[in-house]
Length: 395
Ligand SMILES: *Cc1c(COP(=O)(O)O)cnc(C)c1O
Image (cartoon, protein in one colour):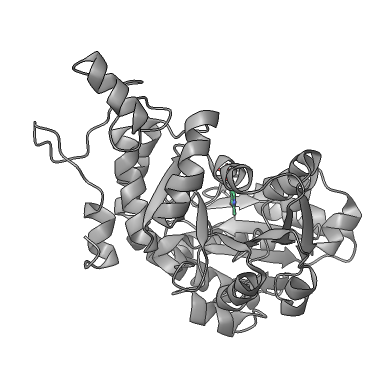
C-alpha cells in the first residue's frame, strides 16, 4: 500500500476482509476471541501482538483504523487509544520514568498542560515549558535527564506555528524523543514524521472523525517504538479505543482530505474578511500574511488549517468580553461548543471556557484576551458563516 497516494490510502489502507468478503469494514463488537484448543490459546497469549486475543489490546476494527492512520502519517505503526489525552498519557507513561525531564512548548492544549504540570510532576517527571518559536529556549532547557520534547503546532487557540524540523534536530542532538501533537492539521495538511518528529499523537476526536461523534486518539511512530513501548502499556493499563469508535473513525478518515481542504479554504476567506472588519483588533490565522509565522506555516503545512482566532475590539476587558459574547450570541448557524474539527462551524470564547480555570495573569501571558474568539470553521457556505458573524459585529 505504501506506493499509493494519500487520497487512495485514505479510503483503502488498512482494510481487511473476513471470509464473507464484506465491502465496508466490519465492526467487531466482541470483547474477546476464541481459540480452537488450550494449546492455541497458550500460544496466542504468548504472542498477543500477532493474533486477536482480547479487545483491550487487539481488535480487527481497531487494527484497520491503526493501519490506515499509520499509512496517512507515513509511519510504520500506530496504536489507538480512547482519546487524545490518553494517547499523550500513554506516550509519557510508557517512555519516561521518575527522575526524567520533559521539555514542552508552553502553547499546548489546556489538558496537556495540566497533565504535565500537575499530574506527571507527582510521579517525578519534571517539565520545562518554553516559547515554541524560541529555538535557543529549547536548547537552554535541556538537562542531563531530558528524555522527551513535546510540541503542538499550530497551537490552540492562537495558532502559533513552530518549526518542526529545527526543533527536531535539537531533540536529536539531546537524544530526546520528539513528540508532535498533529491534531490541528491532521495528516491531510502536515506530516510531522517526514519533518523529523519521532512520534505523532492525535486527538482523533477532532478532524479524523470530523463530524463530532466519538472520542478517540492515537500514537504513531516506528514499529519498534509502538510495539516495544506503547502496545505493552495499553495492553496492561487499558486506555483502549473501542471497536465502535474505530469504525466511526475509519469512515471519517475517508473524507479527511476533502474536508480539510474545503474547511481551510472557508477559513482563509473568513480570516481575510475578519481582518478587514473595523470591529476586529487582530486575526490569528497561519494562512494570512500578517501571521508572525506565515512563511514557516506555508512551508510546513499545505494550507493554513481551519481554525481562526480573532480579537474583538473593546476599550476595557469588560467591554471586550461583552462584545465577544454579543458576536457569539448573535450567531444562528455556528454551534457554541467546546469541540473543534467538526463539519459544522463551532465558536468558543476561550477566556471564559477552555481557559477559564487558569489565572487572569496566566491568560494574559498566553495572549488570551477577553475579546478573543476561536472559530473552528466547518463546511457551511463561507458567505453564510460571514453573515452569521456579522450579525453581532455590525450592531
Ligand atoms: C482536543 C485536543 C486534545 C485532547 O483530545 P481528546 O480526544 O479530547 O482527549 C489534545 N490535543 C489537542 C491539540 C486537542 O485539540
